[in-house]
Image 1: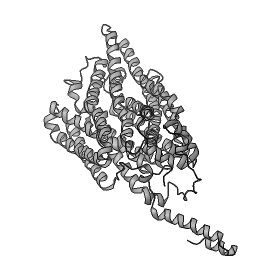
Image 2: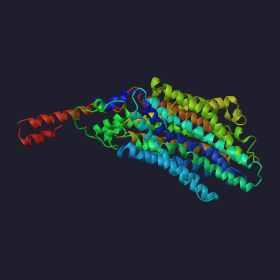
Image 3: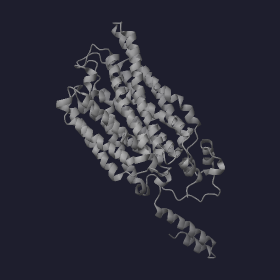
Amino acid sequence: MALKVLSALDSAKTQYYHFKAIIIAGMGLFTDAYDLFCIPPIMKLLGRIYYSDGADRFQIPNAVVSPMLALALLGTVIGQLVFGRLGDLIGRRRVYGLALMLMVLSSLACGFSICTTKQCVLGSLGFFRFLLGVGIGGDYPLSATIMSEFANKMTRGAFIAAVFSMQGFGILASSTVTMAVCKIFEATTTRDNDVNKRQHQADIAWRLILMLGSIPAAFTYYWRMTMPESARYTALVEQNVMQAAKDMEKVLDVSISQIAEEYPLPPSPPQYPLISKRFLRRHGRDLFACATSWLLVDIVFYSSNLFQSKIYHQYIDGNGHDQTRSAFEEAFKVARHQAIFAICSTIPGYFVTVFFIDRIGRVAIQALGFFFMGVIYLAIGVPYSYKWSKHTNFGFMFLYALTFFFANFGPNTTTFIVPAELFPARFRSTCHGISGAFGKVGAIIGTVAFLWASHDDNKVNATGVTIALLILGGVCFMGFAITYFFTRETMGRSLEENEKEDDSDALCFLRCLTKSSLRTNSPRNNNEVAVNADAP
């Protein structure tokens, strides 16, 4: 029988606190997207500042771009594993503020990257972006777990999807801020022909863009520190049901008498560790499905997002790299196209998921998303080298935008939701972190591999882009197969129903308790009791 406080959470009506929790949890995802997706236009500015000589003037070599992108993602992998485990060991709330503060401070530090020489700036920027990635990674499992444990079972999917949709607004914000900063600096340097002064202005601009991303997250720090610990963690992991009831009395519109237990709870069944055969037997399939699906979708999602300007490069570069164009104009064009795609496809995909996730289910949305992404990538990739490599028309842009729509109305969102619903409370944050870490490994594979496959001597290679697009299509179909054969549906069920352990183990535990009680009260001698108590 479920605890009263957990039943109250599952049946609670949507109220102000739910929306507050969405903002508190979602701001980390907002900062995550802002800091990851402001890098493409910033790399344009850095190319103009530090690579103004040589044959490939203004172009940052792939050997520099690759580690700059991979370092933040590698930090995210570590953050998801470390903070995910800490969230289960010492509590969600205790490490939640730490992850956000690490994001804020690292984001500011990126803007204050020391020195002005090329090697020093890029080296320090890479280091601080690695730390930023650790904070971002820590926010993923904690935000998803906290939102899932506070939400009611009928709208839980929509609430978690709403948290994740803040990523779309983060992408839009990063593009908007970049365009605004570029326009302001462009206006102040238009009549100045001093190259050194222009480079100095560009150096200030990219730092300012990075630092502005820390402001929204900083505003939510106080809220994170004052929110109560998750009732499910307090009741199920810490075994303090009364404290869970007291915490939820402040959140839910109920009196403590309605959610406190009348009688002492029986002792909990024997626990098993994370690394054990029992864990693999009970949850191995779910962890495999979550981790593999997230790995596959991030290969596709991050390679397409971070290098979209390379795919439709004609709109950015014109007839080759126009070296007479200012750094601000070039960065502005990259940011403008990112904003257009965010408004027309990315954000609508999130909204459609919020609407349908608790109506048609997670598995259906994830499978459909993978399938349609695969079809579209094949439709783009097959004719790319001879039809769209030199002229990306409206048809190409429409199809390419659909890949972002079906990523977000599909696996990019559901892979964030499902791991927060499938696993027991004592493993929930850890398993979400493991799944997310696999995803960011996929992101590293996708970004680095796509960059090298699509470029030849720092120029876009049409054949390489074609091959990369076809491979991305194949990856999507693999994701469809994993979803269809291995992913379990979690819609409309409480977290305790989704995580339900083997009935045989529960019955065995109850039999042991019953036998122990009967034998303790029997008139047999103590030696016989001791012998029988060890019997199966």
